[in-house]
Image (cartoon, rainbow, N blue to C red):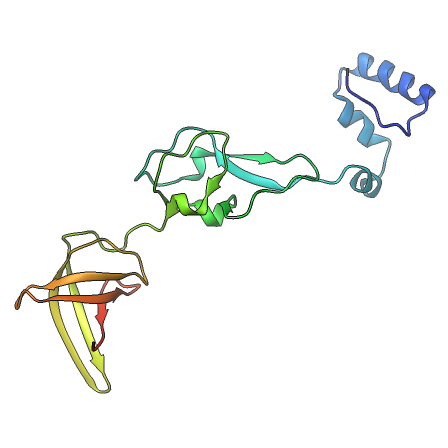
Length: 175
């Protein structure tokens, strides 16, 4: 049997139990018909809604919303800091380590999808004022937009460091 709020009178509790037995409804649904929405909100604050894995997500796997389930935290409880729990934080990200069902997902355990893979041929640009130099290079490490990665110039064999741009090119600067 579910615990009732202390403010209910014995008569109201008895009437509620009889109504529940007759109607076969859960107590929270029956209780809400007798109170306005503002009274319910003030008596029972809504818990924070978060996303957690519904199955094991393995390292290197893309996180999809189908692999997550939505849960409501107990009122008064909050998610720990540095945890990703919203769809926009998780959708399309890559798991860096195994994520277990029913557990929070640390932000350190996910990463952006690689924009350039290791060993891919990319265009490298050096821009200084009106001068633009472009070359073809091979990436020596994967990277997402904004990451600083190393590339090898295909013509000279020289290793350069550059920033991955949103279009998948690499921009190098004078060093």
